[in-house]
Image 1 (cartoon, helix red, strand yellow):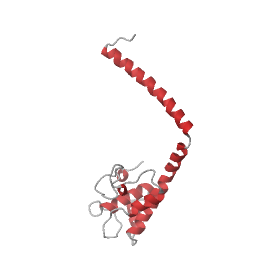
Image 2: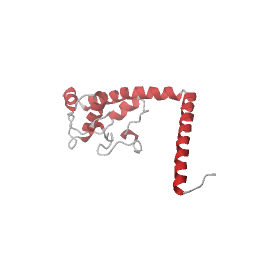
Image 3: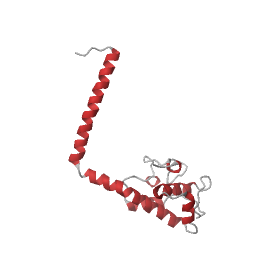
Image 4: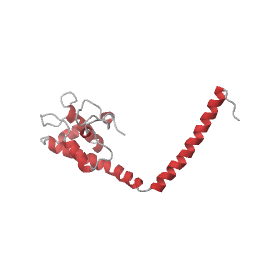
Length: 154
């Protein structure tokens, strides 16, 4: 569950826009299957201002605020705690921490994805079972539609 601050993750390159996997700039978004090194690199390249102070203010510091919200979602820390944690530290330390934390957070999802990819028979069984269920539901729906429209079944 993501609270209000994590409900809408913004682009890493244009923090005024929503993060989108269809963005032409691959540095603007994190893919669930990006490897750890790529994730950290994308966060290091994230757009911020030249102030170097880590605090949350969407109007003055949209890039830093976006990174703080992402970090907050991944760690459960409050924005105030994050501000204190990085007080006196530069954006380099902050971006590295966000990147490593997000990479660590996504690792179990990635491991499970790769594990399931290796179990083709299991995936085919699931697809077959659910295709049967979908077919039964579709036939029931089609039967109801035919009755409503007045088609006679032979």
